[in-house]
Length: 233
Image (tube, rainbow, N blue to C red; front, side, top):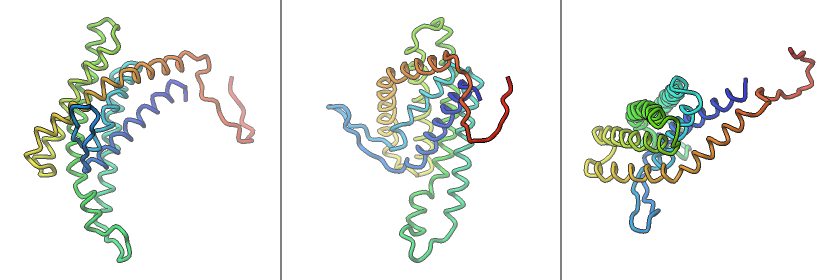
């Protein structure tokens, strides 16, 4: 595996982990007093979610649309797998001495399937839009203004994602109807704020990846396990 392939694999794994983790912890809602004049009320799953767009933008920048789309599909497949596992485990009866009984486990993870369906719809739609917009803005600006294509595509895609997932969970009574508007506004504004603040991180990641790609050593060094393995030249 080349160093370039390793970077791509790491980005894909991080994307899948963030997607799955966000769905596992989404039921807890918090208030974040980040700004002196406003506190953001949002799900825990939304806090790190903007990083998924940063990751797909990095993949789109260095590997193109096809590999970015594959990364999104990989994350969705991981979501489906985890959802099936959790739904299966939810039907198993807890022992009499288990600290987590059936009711508690179901209350925590029983609605994961609803979140998972809404997340898939929102994630796939928003990420496809983000990838297409990113490439369109890059072409429009002739490869200049890295921050513009990163934040321009993400700003629109984040709203699409937030609107779909919160509306979906409200329709299925996971969230109260009277919180629909405030949650969409708070979640989107936080994600947008997070995305803008992460511009230096995006530039840093671009610089690191470029540096790694330009190194003369393109193969991952193999570990010497004491085995007599002949190397091809």
